[in-house]
Image (cartoon, rainbow, N blue to C red; front, top):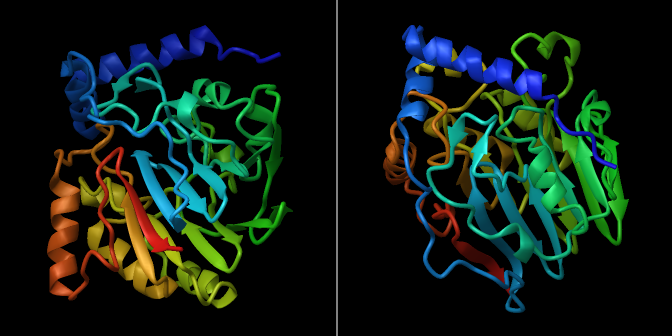
Length: 315
């Protein structure tokens, strides 16, 4: 039996956000005002994929939106930070519908959740996937907050691994903040992580949310020296003085890609929700500009549209 989220807390959050917007309270006020100004349905994706299994692929990636990425490694799938709802926290509406409907997600070797923020841990979305997976992996301090589902929820601390059916998933350090509400991050000092998925000689890094930290990326490379792919956040970037403590910008994401030593990169965490001063299109435009400056082509950094699936390594 699942336990619903407490309605009073949702109402409190909505009232706080509205108050910030009405008072034009700095950055939070600007973001809330832009979210409240949105009207209508999210943009539809034409010819949305219904069958994501690619028999021609050893490694394929489908960007569902934000930090939700469906990774196919040979015959298995891993899903990251699943958010399929029409909004997060009852406040921030989707700009674009999910790149695949939850009902069409294939059976999963695992689901991973990088941290508890509303745009990464969605209880309603986990309910949609309840019978698609046997395991959901979360950082330390998060399991107690996961409602009771049919699948197992298991915490992985830094460098700990889960292995089943030949798939090995290891929690790797990133630089972010835990907690779900404004004041509970201090109670969960380790409640955020990245992951590396390994299967049949393929290795995929998923950064979740992270600020730039050269030491942490180098430590991950030391343990996983031949990463096949790095899935990295490139947004939000503005206001930079505020965001840089917990989020990479586009140039830092490319630096992280280099430090990780991955063969390929797929950017994510942009143009799905309004959560910064960035405008739609800013982050991928800047990323492509920096790619050109560094001589990086689409064969190294694959910038996907929401709903696009790319075969990165064919059979």
